[in-house]
Image (cartoon, rainbow, N blue to C red; front, side, top):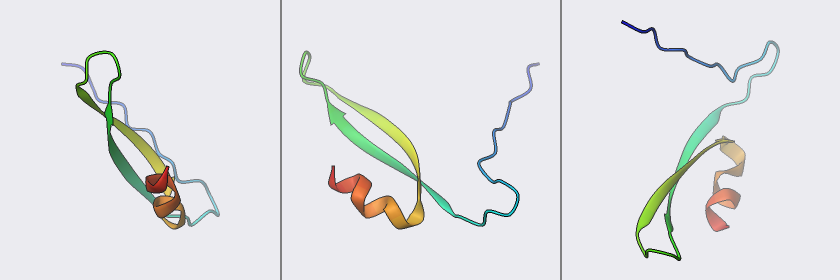
Length: 51
């Protein structure tokens, strides 16, 4: 059984909190929706969603 690799975004001395932003993006070719995930700092969530 394979082990899952977990990446950490936390660095020593940095106490920033992150949020996962998931957006639905419509494909121009097929018209279907796909989802795009981003990890952004909590204070930049509104700017990321406004794009």
